Length: 256
Image (cartoon, rainbow, N blue to C red):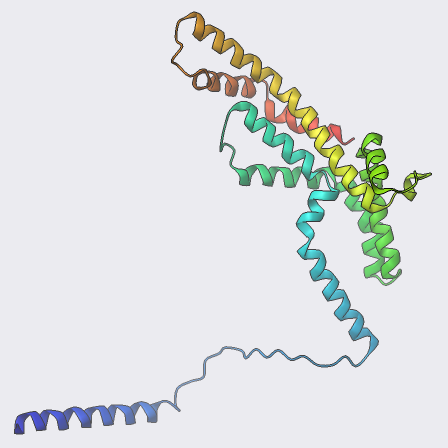
């Protein structure tokens, strides 16, 4: 019992001195060089503060719908669908991967849309940032080249369809076409153009599949899957014909 009591007293004294030593050493520790972050919400004191706040809100709104805008008003839809047709026509399931297809479509869209972006920047964004024009005039100067691009790629059939479905009168000029009619008409035209190009891409590979199937049937190899044999020949044909360059050149020229 005396031994246990001595051990308990020693443990208690050790804990006490350790806690005292830690408490005495704590004020002498150097401060961490981490900056303090404070966020404050204050009332606007001038109309310029209100304008800046509205611009930030508008910018965040545009950034949230940027993927949809990219799909709707650029060449991204046609390029992505055509590249998907190329992969399916070759019979490749995940080669190239989806990330590669989307990235290639994005960079090709940036290349195709570069002249339009230059006009939008020089006529709308640059004068607005320099304070020479207002926000509404800048918005009009930015949307005008984009509308011109979409109108040049939109078929009259799709425009007539959307005008009739909207119940509006037939516009007398292209400038009178509202955006709610132009945007879906442009998307339909892009899908139609992409599918037409996809049919042309599919034809030679279908011929290869038919030839391989006929050869296998004539040799009596009915149990051998024709797709397994035709896949290397289709890839070889695509590589020998410089297929990627042909597809990219055809896509770029289809917008000119």
